[in-house]
Amino acid sequence: MATKTKSPQDGRQRGRPGAKPPPPEEPAPKVLADNRKAFFNYAIDRKIEAGLALTGTEIKSVRAGRVNLADGYAKIDKGQAWLRNVHIAPWTHASFENHDPTRIRRLLLHRGEIGILAGEVSQHGYTLVPLRLYVRNGVAKVEIGVAKGKRLYDKRQVIKERDTRREMDAAIKRRIGRGPGTDR
Image (cartoon, rainbow, N blue to C red):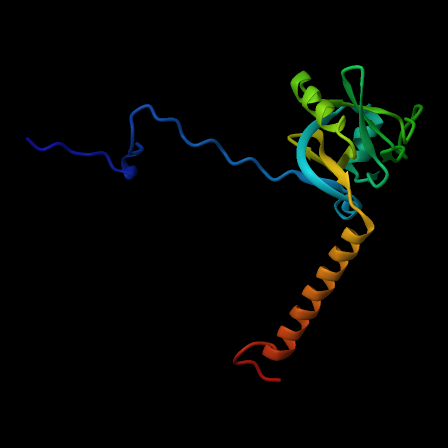
């Protein structure tokens, strides 16, 4: 008595009966603003994702990419996390009153996450810095970094390493040329 196994052409999937298909991969978030200055001025110890409470015209400006995170920071007051000094440009097509570009905005975090961040920031020299602002599944998110300020000599060391790496890459390109088999 031979049994016939079902093949994928028969319309059924092989594997464990009742197995769920793998979840669809989540698309990469669309980064709208990046704080490159923060990575140079601070040593980032930890990153955390937070939601951002925005008004109607603010989310339109954010989706248009009219955001500046350069001078921004986050602060914890009375059990709430707040984002300060982040400039979101007013929406130009608004028919009603626009928002204040640098108003204080609430960060949407769980109570436990706020407690952990408050404990880390209470240590000497640590601050909360916005690193990226992006939209994931239609919701504005901001990546906050627990950061400690770099000294001047640390910044000089980073610049020196970057220049050395750039010079080595240029020397390798000169030495190798355009690659084997190409005419010059």
